[in-house]
Amino acid sequence: MKGQWLGRFETTGAVGRDEGNLLIDIDEKDGVFHGYAVLQSDQGNLPLVFTKFITNDTAPTQTLT
Image (cartoon, rainbow, N blue to C red; front, top):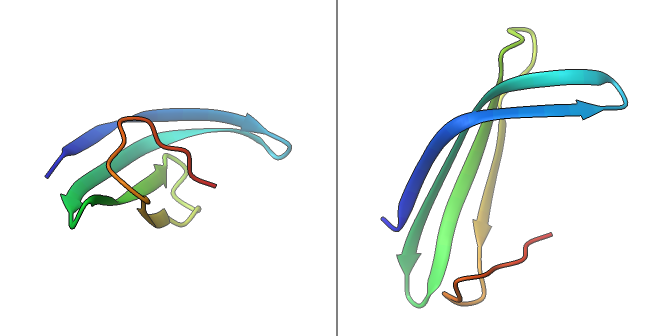
């Protein structure tokens, strides 16, 4: 495992303000990084947001879209 980060997020958008917990996990395998991120809003009526990602290499700076 390259890293695991657990913290808080805060956002303001067109539909209002939200905050909650953020988890990011990154592993290195076969010369690339594999990872996922999970957002859990403090508002109990909203679903979890989950995404997976794979980078092109193990460069220390990455850009994902």
